[in-house]
Image (cartoon, rainbow, N blue to C red; front, side, top):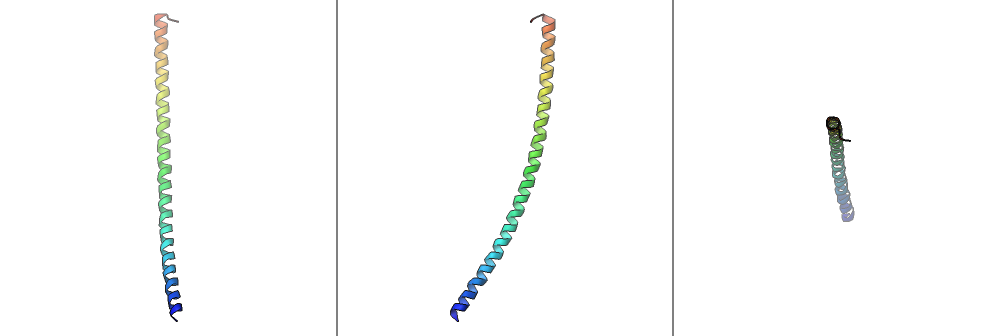
Length: 78
């Protein structure tokens, strides 16, 4: 009977551990989902910032080209 009692104790402990691991797995999955959502939001923000930087850069280059053209026209340099 001792062996059955020991087996029963071990099975109960394993089932308890299994439940704990399942809860931990659920919690970790929620953390991953939250992290992925935050990552997607950060990625969107960075893309918007990059696009804004490109727009500003293009505007600056256009203005510099216009200034250089004016200088060229005014000085007659080729």
